[in-house]
Structures are given as C-alpha cells and as structure tokens.
Amino acid sequence: MTILDKIVADKHTEVELRKKLIPIEQLEQSVLFEKDAISLVKSLNSTHSGIIAEHKRRSPSKSVINQNLNVFDVAKGYEKAGVCGMSVLTDGKYFGGSLDDLLTARASCKLPLLRKEFIIDPYQIIEAKAYGADVILLIAAILSKDELKAYSELAQSLELEVLLEVHNEQELKKSLLPTVDMLGVNNRNLKTFEVSLDISKALSQLIPDDFVKVSESGISSVSAIKELQTFGYKGFLIGENFMKTDDAGKSAKQFIEELTQ
Ligand SMILES: O=C(O)c1ccccc1NCC(=O)[C@H](O)[C@H](O)COP(=O)(O)O
Image (cartoon, rainbow, N blue to C red; front, side, top):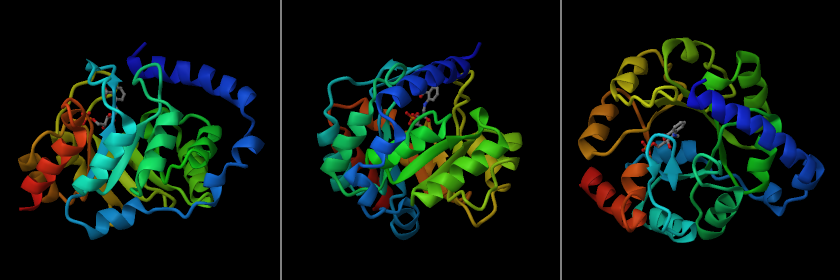
C-alpha cells in the first residue's frame, strides 16, 4: 500500500464521519456561500509573480516543516509579498492542517484561496465553498475520468475554479475537460516522493493552451521558475521553501523581489 492509498483510505472514513456531523444542508447555510468568487486564473494571467504560496505544517515526505507559524500571519504575509494565490492544506492526519486554517486564511486576506485536499467525495467540494475557498484541487491519480468530470462540473456550478493535478501522460489524457481551469503538474511522485522538475518540462507540450499551466512541488529557486516559464508555466505552487523559514511571508517577499527585478 502506498502513502497515497493510505491517505485516500483514511479520507473515506473521515468524510463519512464529517457528513454525519455536519450535513450538506447545514454547510449550504454558510455565509461564505454568498461571497463573490476571487479568481486565481485572473490573478495568474495578470500579474508577474505567478506564485501560489502554501500553508503547510508537515508532510509525509518531510515530516515536520514548521508548527510555529500562525496561519493568519502567514496569509497576511503572503498577500503583502505579492503572491497570486494561497494554498491551504486542510488534511489533518498527514499535513497538520484543518478547515479552520482555511477559514482563518479567508478572514486574513483577499487572495484567491485553494483548498489543498484529497477530494474523493462531492461533500468536500461543498465544504470547500462553505469554508471560503475559491479554488479546489482535484488529483487525477485518485479519481476516475467520470469523477473528474462530475466533480469539476459541481465546482463550476458553485463558482469554484478547478486546479486538476497530474503527474504523467496517462493522467493528463483523462484530465483535459472543459470544466477544468488550471492543469497542475506535480513534480512530486505521490507514491514514491521522488521530485523532478523534468516532469513539468516533459508534460508541458501535451497541455493545450486553453488551460493555465501550474507547476507544483519541489520549487525552491528563482532560476527554476524562469526556466519553467519558458515551458509555458504561469503558476508555481510553493510550500516548504517558504514554510521552513521563521517568516513565510518575508521569505515569499524576498523570493518575488528576486523574481521580478
Ligand atoms: O508534500 C508531500 O510530501 C506530499 C506527499 C503526499 C501527497 C501530497 C504531498 N504534498 C502535497 C503537495 O502537492 C505539496 O504540498 C505542494 O505542491 C507544495 O510542495 P513543496 O513546495 O514541495 O512543499
């Protein structure tokens, strides 16, 4: 059993419990259902940094990254730094995140917010909306083509943008759907944790121009971004590189200054 299999198995148990605790009808009462959507696609298309900065306390590959930062301050810092959007990990067991983190980030900034989660049930998409997300992540490695289609359609009906994550050509083939806004290439193999930016470079030519291209994971230098830009990438999802410092916002600011000078 890979780590991804374990995460997905645990997620099924967790979601069944959540459904009993907070029924969908109750989620739909959230005032955040009325909030205007903030578009990550527009932000990536109109600004230079392209950075989607992540709040990530720990991970299966790195164990503890940073447990000391406060998500309210991190979100404010990222906004001040000029990032295009913020990714908030909401998985508790493997990443130390929560839906409360998403809510806190929402209260702290006006950035487009991505709910970074292992979505395996439509319930979690409604949850994302209720807790203030603007974008959801769908992972091709854990969903069938029919699920990708149905989940991205549901997201669109809720005015949530969809970032669909792939890691190889086979996953990409089933992901080219009209209801998908952004295609993310994860440089990390979620089964082995091996990281290589060559994955983004190799898959870039297979992604049609109608999708905003996002490169995810293992990015830690401005030179890597400049190279990925030549392959058509507009978005760059960065977690550990900022979160491992004492001040994630300051670290993002210095990074963006170097990128845009
Ligand atoms: O980060 C992990 O170890 C991981 C393991 C298994 C499934 C997902 C995982 N990470 C989720 C992500 O996609 C990253 O948090 C994100 O792309 C940022 O990556 P990084 O900049 O390398 O922290």
